[in-house]
Structures are given as C-alpha cells and as structure tokens.
Image (tube, rainbow, N blue to C red):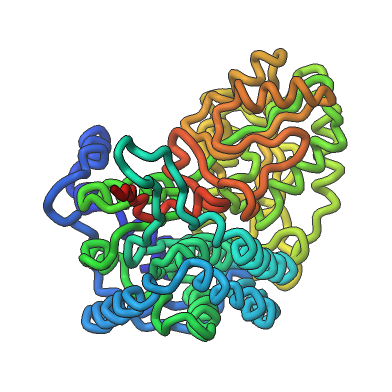
Length: 505
C-alpha cells in the first residue's frame, strides 16, 4: 500500500502474476519474451479505488481521484469512437488548422499547469512552465507543417493504370500510456500529430499526474471545429488498461516508460495485432575525447543531467572521458554542479521510493569501487523540503564496467564518470549498453565528431558538442532496448496511419 501511495504501483501492478508465482528469473523472462498469447495477460489484482496525489516536496496529499467504473470507461471509449467517425471525414488540412489553436490554450494555462506539475511530481515551477511552452511550440510546428506530411504521395504508375499513389488514412482510437517525468510534453508530443492524422486518443496518464491530464483534456476538447470527446483522459487502474487495448475501436498504443513495462505492453499489443510505439529508457553515454572543449562538455553534461532532477530518459547517465583530460573534466564538473540551486535547477525526486532506489544504486556503486566526489544520500536537506524525496546532484568517478552506475539506468541527478584509454576505447565503452537512445560526442574536430556520431555510436540520436534534446522538427526514439518507433517530425505523425496504396485504371 505504501508503494502505491508513493506512485510506484504503476510499475509494480503492470507485472503479471507469474512474477509472484514463479521463483525462477529465467522462467519469468521467458514468459515475457513469449508473452504473445491469445489469453489476456494475468494482471495483478487489487482493490485500489482512489489515487492520492502526494506532493513530493511536503509529502502532503493535496487531492484524490476516484477510479472510473468499467461502465464509465466503456462509455468514454464509445463516445471517443463516435467522435473519431466524425473527425476522420474532415480534410487533413482542416484538422491540422483546428488543432493548431491548442497552442494558445496551453499558453493561457501555462502558469496554472506549471504550479500543478510542481505539486504532482516535484519539477521546479520555472522548468514546468518551460515544458508547457515547449508543448505549445510543438503544436505551432505541426500546425505549420502537418498538412504537408499528410498529403498523398505519388508513386510510379503501374503499367496499364492511370495513377498510383499512397493515401495516409487514420486507424481509429489510439491508447496513450504516458509517464510522470514530463507530464504535459509527453502527452502533447504524442497526441497532437496523432489527432491531426485523423485518429482519436484516450490517455492513461501516470497516477500522480491526472491533474495535468485534465488540463490537456480541457484544452483539446474546447477547440472550435474539433469534436467533443476526441481526446479523453482515463482515470483507471492498471488492470483496466487491458480492456482498453482489447476494445475493437482501439487500434494502437503509444507507451513511454520503463523497459520492463514496455515489454509487457508491446507483447500484449502484438498478441492483438495492434500497432505499438514504445519509448523506453536509456543509459547512454556522452563521449569526451582528448581534444574536447572541456568547458563546453562539462556544461552539457551537468545541465543535461541535473535538469528535471535527472529524471530524463535522454540525459547522460555515463560520461566517458579520455584519461588525458579526466582530472581536468572532473574539476570543471564539480565547479558547475556547485552552482546548481534547489528549486530552480532541480527539485525533489518524484517520490520517496525513487530516493531509496537511487541512494542504493549510489551506495552499491561505491561498494563496487566507484569514488563519490560530491553529493550522496547523506547530504543536508534544503530548507522547505521534508526530505522524503530529496536527493542532491551527485558525482561518481572511477566507474567501470560491471558496476551498478555503469550497467543500470540511474533515474536521478547522478553523473557517472568513466575513464577511457583512447578514442577507440571510449566508443567501445559508449556502446557497451543494452540501451541506445541518445548519445553525444565532444571534440574540437567536428568532422571526426560527426563521423563517430554517424558510424560508431549505437543510438537513435547522437549530437556533436551539445546535449541531446527533443524537438518537434526531429524524429525522437532509440534502438536496442530503448524502444520501437519514432515520435516527432513526419515520422511521429505517420506512426498511427494506414499507408493505403491506391491504383486507378
């Protein structure tokens, strides 16, 4: 019950009962890999009927939401399906224009949403407002470019035919399962291009972010020219998610979250032959070569790792540094970390369990031989924070393969510095990970940096001389255990469409 109150229940409750009934790890993993089955996944059963909203800074419950009944849930899906049938007939350019008005609605509620995000998951208010404004910018970008992405694509005409082309048609209602770390950006990033493509969306948000979900629903359901109920937020318990995905009007799922849950969702969608876009974690590296601008590299590593209190899938979990410049790089990192301010640059973690997890990962890494340079669980708690979810910016060095800080994704403000013998060794270490989301290379030889980024780094995104970020104009996603599919740009808009071939004789 305490884990549920700390909002960890989402991760736990998605785990099939086989995890409880089987003691063999290999059996459990085999069940996940073979998870394509005709029967429903046996979700953990609970009697949870309310979702308490707990402020991680104060540990106070500021609101509670009641779980929707199955009848309410099916009624909403039916209404959304009806809205979709109307929406799919609207010309693409008209759909794009109508949804473009959402940008102004988000901007008008930016201050309100930023305060709520701070309450829900601890993000500093300034960063929360920046997130809302970035979401509005995404709407603007798709309003300007979306219609072009949805135009018919002409293909070579078949012999004996007058024309051949591809038409991008919507699929239906798409289930969106979104996380708490960017509670508005993640929702809008998925919803806007998917809706513009002619689909409807039902959202299952993280259980501590139902307030932010409600703001998104209010904005999207108040737009002239957009059918009511085209986008709905579902206040549901995890076992109900299976019923949503099974519903015949639901034709796909977009999931952002942990690897373990993502595998279960992808397996379930696959068993139903429904499209899935899965964006998971990363333990990617920033590779600092011997000729790097160390000020630039240290700025990028610290800023990217401390933003959102380190709870970012694309932040640099590992900083791999050439041994010739490691000591100088460490010093610059420490100087820049010391300038970071609580409540501005970072806040509390999402809940107390997250603090416990990160403290253990840091302690385990130290026991394995890593050296703590600054931070750690014993650091004093800032005034005004209850301390339950506080973890300061932390720097570990002398991290090596096999250590927790090298092998695991630490989802908090922990910088792990790894020494590389040379350029080839640095690339080898960077790729020594089951994940491949976003990496970076730092060198003053830009041609070399670009070559390494293109040909050597195993990731869905790789930046040269700056930190990795998401932007609506660029595809976002990873390889290996970091997920399937892409968000943003034209790729994101065309994930949930029927690429329909048309030939006319």
